[in-house]
Length: 141
Image 1: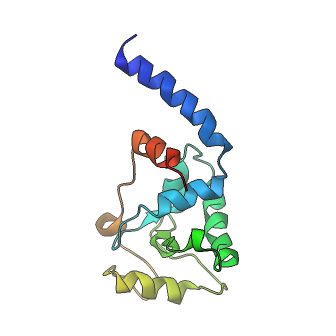
Image 2 (image 1 turned 30 degrees about the horizontal axis):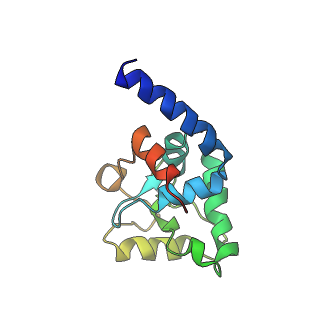
């Protein structure tokens, strides 16, 4: 068997294991990889995780962080680096609202305009490829 085919089967086995991991935990692992000064969209994270229709679930995962603030496992998840696909901060009426998210992004050097828009062409994070995702999700929490 060629290494590429072998890699495919090995990766398929690992994918089955990954499916057992809580989706929210997968989201947090990916979001932790977004570097300071960069942003990505809910949909981009969903696509990286092999769930292209789960952008809203990514948002739910990030919103759930507020209920986990006292758990050190969830410290340091840079939720503020995730915005909508149009480059806008879309949080409304939340404890950590749009102004808080904009302030955190500005502190990292991201320009956020008065309408809470970010230039995705300038600040978008390229993301992880499927091999990097596979390796990341195999790491212990």
